[in-house]
Length: 371
Ligand SMILES: *Cc1c(COP(=O)(O)O)cnc(C)c1O
Image (cartoon, rainbow, N blue to C red; front, side, top):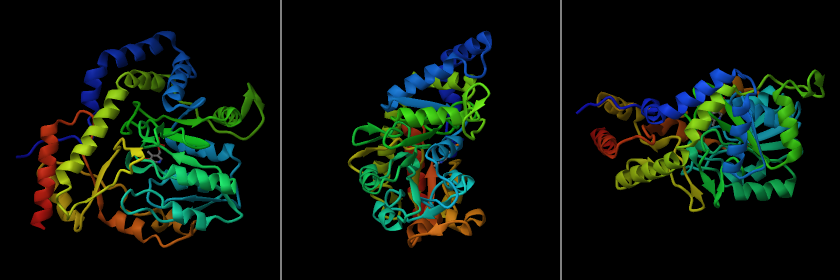
């Protein structure tokens, strides 16, 4: 049996939401306020309420959200920022862009998230921020990080690019730290039809600074109080997010369900390594990621069955040419390296049929047995 299974199904989602999305886009075309139109504010108000914080500042991408967060916190040359080496490059890129040094500590093998015990050991007098990544849709131990944050006076910036809709201790990802940074890249749990992102914060002061940085550091028109960026999110993209928000609760529920269902289908096979969702967390499964030995053979066997896969991420950042010389390694990174060599992700999206999921799980179990 071969099928043509999409890794992420944006076409079915559009078909389901067509009326709403088309209507929202048409409204923008009619009023013509393409920059900072009414949909921008509407989205910010709705998302701040959703995440449960006072402020949402929409920006041009998840990367820009992280960059603006570090700029707003005053991170700069000579400073250090502690983060995970097992993430998309954007997390460390923004640290380097503000002139600071990325400091890498290892991950937990079962959640793929930063190991908080190692974070405390990596703190020096230069540490100006900590960026935990809520990888694959589950937050790190934000409670432990909050304790460290208070004790040392170091702000936390959550890279929540993959985790909007997830919760930690009943609170939503994005609203758990000084800044939460979200991406609306099309394949993320809440995606627009291009680039987009947002910062979340409870601080009136940090929100004001982030809003100024977003528009070239302007306090008001042509009054530049600080260095900023051109970082606004388009009105059209906000309109798409607003349309998709109507169905987001259902999609998050569906993601929780499909992720748990994969775990149930695969857990009896001890050759397939599965992620753990911590009891205080819910996971939005931006990726459903497993570990196997001999990954290439398994991925090839699945491909022969029409099942697409992806590796997030094949090379940890401390091994990347751009970062190896300018970063500091503060612990053994053996778990990050082992994860990079063994992980791959299976198709998971809210519109995945259970029958298709059964087929994927069966094919994976067969592929692992063949090897
Ligand atoms: C997608 C992603 C980003 C960057 O978001 P963009 O909107 O593509 O700039 C940053 N960090 C992580 C972990 C991501 O998955």
